[in-house]
Length: 307
Ligand SMILES: [Zn+2]
Image (tube, rainbow, N blue to C red):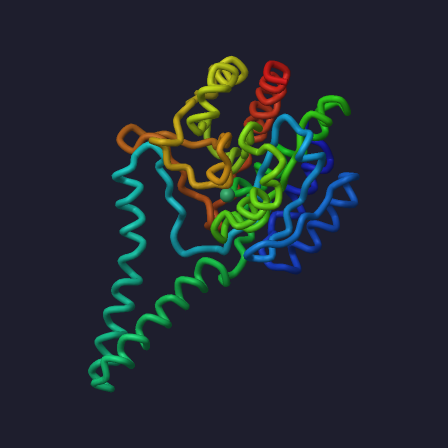
């Protein structure tokens, strides 16, 4: 059973992309979670939402709350299959390449000017990319990316006692989808708060799949690898993977922190391996509630063992 707050986020607050949508969400969250602060600034004028004292916290629990544009192609992500990962990224570039080639050809033909055909191709191609990624229509469905992470944090906050909460700080990052901007600003703002020693556990896309992936930085693996293994055992339904960030591609906010741990749920197929394939499209509707329970209970065991 999720808290009414989590239920309401899932039913009413899935679209958090424009400034206005974010402002409404922030004001509502502040009315629901006493003490939730806004830390604003940095490139992108981010608004991160922070609960607790970052400096005195022993652990940081995080998730980005901003959501993505609805894209014409899924953000297909196979974290352990690097050749496929690169191949898919190149595949997405092909339409842009064709667009640029044709535009360049037509402009060159019409104007016979290198200057015009060069810049007349470069600028519109960049504008098109920028529009698709940042200016596009907000995706109406964000159950997995990253309403699931936001709800995991809310459930953790609700499940902890006041003493437990005092040991942790909770951060809802802004502008992950625009290039991890909110977490970069957070790191800068708190650079004197000992972030290099605090484990930072970031939940991003945790509700679609039965394969539970933990991506640990080298220092995090050394200090907490065993604690994670003990706190998150595989079950009959859920298989756990503890992986090193050096050979696993999972681009999310934890990458900005030395003690970062990325958490995600994935699906698995024989030849592909672990993958995620519905985020950033209208099919991002899968919300496996048992995944939230899995991560909340495991995180509680982890915190009891490391704090
Ligand atoms: Zn995400």
